[in-house]
Length: 293
Image 1 (cartoon, rainbow, N blue to C red):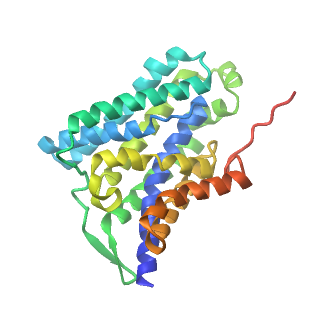
Image 2: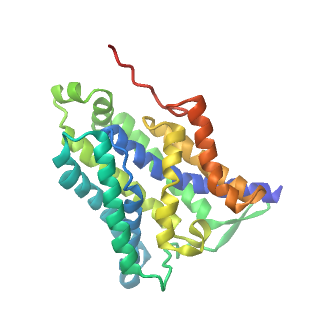
């Protein structure tokens, strides 16, 4: 029983981090209809800046600098590259993000080198707490609480603010939204910045011993790709589905790691994604666009 509680808490905590990433992924897709394969790069940029700043100015300033750097980087990617290719097909823009990802990963890997495996979870990493008799790593609990606060704030903003209304209007019909006076560039740029910010928060937990394992910051880029099946499972058009998808991915990974093997856990998430796509091609909460011909 203690082991099951521990596995479930670990799965929900890790799933909360994936939910942050998947929500950013979905926000960008809803605003631009572009699949952002550079989402792992946003994670890596935030982690690298946080790591460099915290060595001289402490953990908190490092985290703030990392999150802001990811938001700025995402904003610049949209404004400098994607906005100037607005007439390109969405598939071409997706390939563009692959190129961005390759460049960023190569450069940051070169800067970090292979001698060290930097981590970011200083305040809580490796410190267990006890829940229902089970010893649980503090990182998972902190990640869950942070994700609850951030995702709650996001959904309130998405539902009740003018920014959220503009976002929903543009995702429904961008041409009609433009005719109603909504400035498309503000919506898309802010969507990328929010996605970058959520990725910047996620790397604080991904680059820890508990969630990231022993490979440190560079492994966070690989882990961030789990946000892709999370978004697919939940549905690319549904922010709420992204949260559900993140939790499904986290729990699947934790249960498969504990009760089958670490090797099987690496593919179990994708098996779940394939099963969902066979039954519901648009994801659990996604919506199929109806075209009138």
